[in-house]
Structure formats: C-alpha cells, structure tokens
Image (cartoon, rainbow, N blue to C red; front, side, top):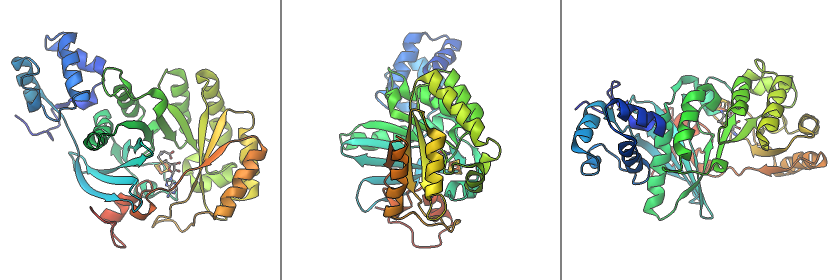
Length: 362
Ligand code: SAH
Ligand code: SF4
C-alpha cells in the first residue's frame, strides 16, 4: 500500500457522491456500494480505509486500499480564546502546507470558518493571508476535511455543526471549482447534510465568479467584502478593486440578487480614520440603496504587516447610524478570539514567523 501522501492515490474526500459513483462504476460496483461507502465516510465518519473492513465487500476494500486514500490533515498548532468560545486550528496538509480552521461555539450553535486556499493572491493590505501571497488552491477534499475535523470534535462533546463560513484563508471564487465541489459534498442530504442556508461564501469581489454563482443553482449565501465605497478608497485596501471596479462589481451583485432572489451580505472591515468616515458611510449607503443587502462591519484585527487600528466603538456606532438612515441593516461582527490571532491568516503568521509570544496551546 502507498502512503496517503502519494499523489497517485485518489483522495475519496475530493469526490462528490456522483463522482464517487462514477469511480466505483468504473470498477464494476453499483450505486448500492457507492451509497454504503458514502455513508461510511460522512454519516459514520470512519477515518481510514482500513476501518471499512467488514462494511464493504472485501474485494472492494482491497481495491480502495490500493488505489484510494482518506487524506486528513494533522494538527500543527491549536489555541483556545480566553472566553472559551473560539478554538483555532492550524492544520497541516499532506504536502506540509498549513491552513487555518476556526471553530466557534456560541449558544449551542457551532460555526466553522474554513480555508479555501493556502495563502491568497488578492493582496488586501490589512489581511495576514494577503500578506503571504498565494501558495496553492485547496482541493475539495482538503476543504471538506476541515469540516470533518471539527464535526469530530463537536461529536465528542455531544454538539453538532450548524454554520459553515468560507471565510478562512483564501479567496473561494479564485478556487471556484474546488470550493463549489466541496459545497456539493457538504450539503449532500445523504451525508453531512449541512443546510444550504447555513453555508456562507465570502468573496473579495471576483466578478466572473459572482456571475457564475448567480447562473448556477449553488446552495450558498453570498457575502461580498467591500471595505471602500469609492474606487480609489477601495483599491487602496483591496488591490483587485482595480481589476473589477465598483460599478462592475455592483452590477454583478444586482444580477445575483435578481437571479437568486437572495439577500447579499456586504462586509466592511472598519479601520480608524480610514474607511470609517461619514463620507464613506454615505457613499456606501448610496451604493447599496434599493438592494436587499445587509452590512457586516468588522473592526480591524491588527496584523503585523499593516499599521492601521480598529475603529472606536463610537465610530462604529456612527457608521451604522448613517447606514440606518439609508434603510440599510448592519451588524457588528464580534472579533471573537482576538487574543489567539483569530483573524484571517493571523495564527499561521504568528506560528511560522513569531514576533511575539505565541497564543497558549491547551
Ligand atoms: N477572501 C474572502 C474570504 C476570506 S477573508 C474575502 O476577502 O471576503 C474573510 C473576511 O475577513 C473578509 O471580509 C476580510 O476582509 C476580513 N478580514 C481579513 N483580515 C482581516 C483583519 N485583519 N481584520 C478584520 N477583518 C479582516
Ligand atoms: Fe484574500 Fe480575503 Fe485576505 Fe483579501 S481579505 S487577501 S481576498 S483572504
């Protein structure tokens, strides 16, 4: 048997149910066998091919041992926030890349924030992941395995997972196929069965990806990171704003709203004296006027590579008041786990380039 790191092995977690069926059909096995294997992977959540012994036909287990693997990441580092709600994991993939996964347990509703890429090519100036650059896309199985890792943790304490946010490291629409195949696996009713309304995909504003999402029946909620309501302001924080200016981005968002009849969430990282001004708030109000939109404001989580500071509570409130005057609802997203570098890409940055004491390992 080859080691699970061998690239020639098929990682079963990469395959949505239909693709798994095609693989098995090619080996002469019917949908009955596909369903038994699928159930073992996602209902029973068995963690190795060896554990399938006795559940599937012995010849099929032998074939799977020879040709397939279940690639699960290992824990490279982990940290718990002092409030106990946030558990941040730095997971190591089979090729040594590390990615972040964050489990948030709050009032019985667990949410996991998963990564879609190792690093990110988009270069947002305040983001620790952007400061690293892109290493590579994650495969569907590498995205699904993050969810399986936390469902196992939750099962140990009798809890279950409710929400998945594709807001970890990386830009999900830059890895469209990998991310959306993972979504297909996660929502499959005969497997993990995550409710489609409970998966949120956050994009920096990759216009072709938003249009493709609008045209395809993909079961996700869309969140668009804006951070600036004029092209100049936005491009200074989000360099891809130059490639897809606001008029193109907003046209794609309106197209999405009309096709999908869904509310869009807009994200706005508030940086003191930068994009928390009344002018920006009014410009944002005008930009989103008439849309079914909700704004999530996130006070900046300071990063080593960016000198900005989070907005004060008063500035956050004043910003929200202006939005409310345009009839725009908004929520302040809590920076839970700030003491453990729970911002995007920050734990990885702290562990691999430590410039100050690391957050505690349990
Ligand atoms: N690439 C996608 C999803 C990952 S980032 C996107 O940009 O939308 C998820 C969210 O975290 C984005 O809204 C991003 O702007 C925000 N974010 C990243 N770094 C941050 C920081 N240091 N402080 C506050 N929010 C941050
Ligand atoms: Fe990439 Fe999102 Fe970070 Fe921007 S904020 S660099 S798009 S992960």
